[in-house]
Amino acid sequence: MKKAVSTERISPLAGTERTFFEGRMEALRAGYELHAQGIVDGWESSSETVAALKKKRFREVHIVTFF
Image (spheres, rainbow, N blue to C red):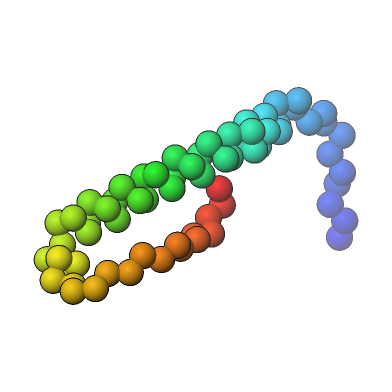
């Protein structure tokens, strides 16, 4: 059974949210990166486990998000 094709007009505002998000995507990603790094730094500075390590290594980690 075929679906009836809608003859209603699509609102010109339908793509507004996506357009806004795409325009701010890099700023949102950078803000998320700073927030996540702050959480990790706070945990490391207060963690007895990290403080007990004799040798520490830093790794660059990339997280895949929808940003």
